Image (tube, rainbow, N blue to C red):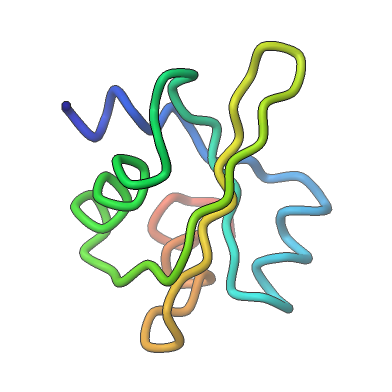
Length: 85
């Protein structure tokens, strides 16, 4: 599946910025049918980074993926690429 169909957009809320700074995590809104493995592959392909883990959460018909990056790839670098910082 196309990574740009899996990953809809990043979230830039106060909580997501705190997670980026303290835990090297970014939050993305993803396709409701995407599983953790496809989200991980899509992020790695889109940003050429290494992902440690992905946790997902569905709320109000929207699926969020909490993506923890490896220590070699700071989340702030990805956020800068996305224009969040």
